[in-house]
Length: 416
Image 1 (cartoon, helix red, strand yellow):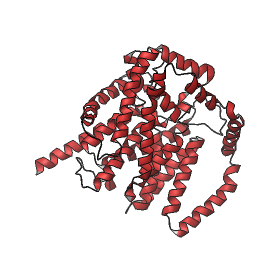
Image 2 (spheres, rainbow, N blue to C red):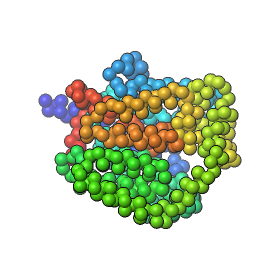
Image 3 (tube, helix red, strand yellow):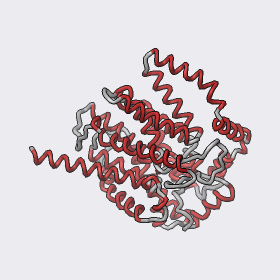
């Protein structure tokens, strides 16, 4: 018995170590500036992704029945594989550049197959979400406090302070949102440590507000308020309503809110000349080199090394057209109709599948992903990719828990 327990503990530690390292590599360790020019992290991440392939092939030999998202994940996997050859044939991008191009945006989707194959415990995944969420919050707050000095790479470092103060977005910021929804859910279902989860939720939401990303803030707030209102006692609902009434009068007078409102009014005033609308029209009507790419996708471009990459960079710099601003349209342009169909399945099943009360944060995240996915590249963004994979797997694990499928590893999450 002791040998079996030791074997189980060793396997648990290995799985946790592999998943945690994979997660850190997927977000480039939150993008520290001293790693910006280093390539070894890319090679290690690529190697770990290669190790996942046997798990992918294993499930291609099995039917999808019994799994909520196996069909959708196979569609995404196929769309990535096919689009790789589309970028080679229609855009003359080398296969090596094409492989590097897909590594960070979408290769991590294959982790789903590993999680299902190993039947990893819910507690292991939640432990990783907790650690990554806390680390993301700390990295964000440090970056905010020491600005303009940089420890972590911030794509908005050179942006004018048009939104009131410095806008910060770090690699891995998607974990702040998943961490927030999980903490909010834990407040209502945790038998102990409610104060801990309240503090975690408040810290994460503070970072979300300070990110100054309008759609992210709006949808996070709406989803959180709906959840709070549905799950709180009457006196708490009264407090929520009172707080909202006060907020209606106070928030519009805050300087950074006024600046964001002015930015929004400017975007609305541009109407159909709004840059995102013009970009969408271009990528849908004039960008596609073939009817095949309209169906199967164009694939991802890699930097400025290939003609495809140079062309995309030119569009960014001269026309200010960014596929990443187009949400699911961008997903379609890159990966074709199969990937869009996969996400239709994910959104439908994610919003309709029954969940245990302790897993309600999964549905909150799926709802959030649906809303922000309309105008952001969250579905192929390294900061969100592993969050999505973990959420989809936790749906599977929650479904399996009702059929008593044994887990391969064990953790007591409440003792963390």
